[in-house]
Picture 1: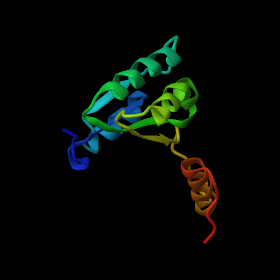
Picture 2: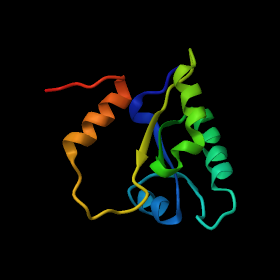
Picture 3: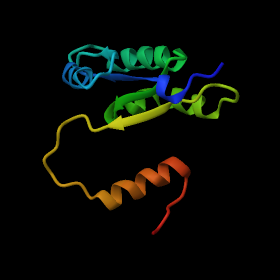
Picture 4: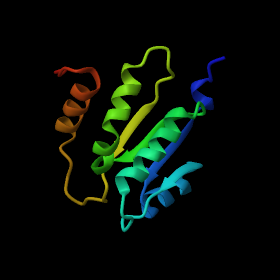
Amino acid sequence: MMKKLQDMEMAIIGTEDQTSIMRLAGVRKYHRISEEESDIREEARKAMELYLKDPTVGIIMIPENWIEYVADMIERMRKAKGVQKKAIIEFPPDLKTEPLDVKAFYRNYTKKLIGFNVEI
């Protein structure tokens, strides 16, 4: 039986600050990685593997500067047939004060998501 979207949980892989903020927002599944840790890559991969296998997780958040560590795992998940797909959300690693070019952001995001640009 497939879980309903509203029953799916969100999980975050991130630093202490990132996971704490999301926990305040109600995210219960998190994997905290210290930036002083010797192997962030290995810790991020372990956490991603855990959440990709967890049938209760529908959305996985990860800092965009760590996405390269798990890119192959995400690609395998996207290409797999008959496997529950997960939404992967990349977020900026730091709070930024510079203005965001929203149009460029969504153009790039759309291209990444569906493979081509959509002009409106």
